Image (cartoon, rainbow, N blue to C red; front, top):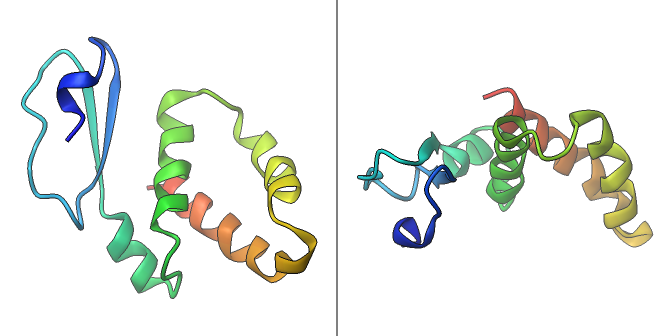
Length: 97
């Protein structure tokens, strides 16, 4: 959907479980991650977005992976700490894909 809005040299991340269309441009990097299927296979339903974030972190080098856990601790509220480990597992899956 946003292929044409991506700047030359940019990156496009696609959940290949949901989108079959391939990026047609050759001036961007495209990554195809079956995030929804991976989440389902691992019992992490609803966390495909976190799998995508993990892969984006690895490929973009925007944030060192060592900072992810600390950031997640600040983002996941105290009431939802039971979701912390699941989110971290999802990010790790995407990072290691």
